[in-house]
Image (cartoon, rainbow over all chains, first blue to last red; front, side, top):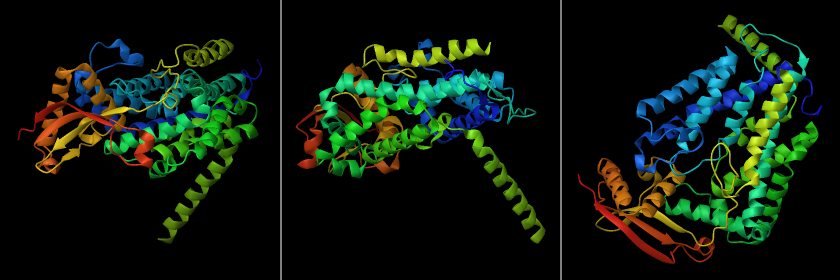
Length: 298
Length: 144
């Protein structure tokens, strides 16, 4: 089990904390309106999922807005690494709560699952031993390795599950592309008929059947082959580019965005992030120096 | 302590996330899921939607009016109301009619109706967008 308990630098885990945290914060800010628009739904539509199943009835509006505000505050603190042992679990739970609450009205959204799971994994890891207020560590240790492996493995498992579901639910129809074609057509019909933005490329492509067999096979290979990304960085890079292309394809054919994946934040755990740190520091220094020169010029 | 966390919590969390894969493939939840969204056979789906009726025509009301901006939420909201029966449809129709009444962009809309229509998704794009079947479930007036 040395793979799972491999030594890694504290910096890699800290950069992972910052990357995932920044994404989650940006997501909550950008999606604040849809996340809180549920306050206007009828209580009859309430169908709780995840931790929201603890509730018998919807929360009052102030609690919905309060939960989002709490998530933003705890998220800001844990991302910078402030009082991490307390703020990180609070943020992980708050993010899970806010996104679960939004999915508790008859439609389960799958765009935030991986981010929520990554935050939970990082919440109980020593991810603020460096790049945090008053904390610097150059240590390389197994205690920094397992959380990175956990985050990567969680990503891989979700792709494998999606592939398995296609085979179990769709079977041969999925493999020959018929189901994927019907899926793309269905999704675009629904959007057109409901007056939402559809994907013109998808609407055009479904007039042909031949591309969908190739696309279906590519999707299945990518999803079921996800564990290969755990082998080494080079294989991971190939798989990540494939997975990113897959999500770009979903966006172009069905107008469905998976922002966590498309932003690459979902795949950070596959790479030696600490190698980017000197470049990031040089860029920061360069910006500070040029700012200083500009100030002198004026 | 680190080793206990690594194997107990780390591997435990991964096992927990993988667990739905061994159960019913349609068992969908959050954050644990089988991710069945693109896997289910679709056939010829029946779509339920909401129309605003003017003097001249019937307009499809967009997701912002039906479920405050989310298309998937709008689909689920209307479908659930139709499945639940007249009382739920009355509540939804009345709420949408009130939103329509307060929005100047929908000034010509006199009535709201909840409709279902069955489409052949492939034929929709290869031959034309007419539904194979259409059924009106409920209608309510827009009171200004």
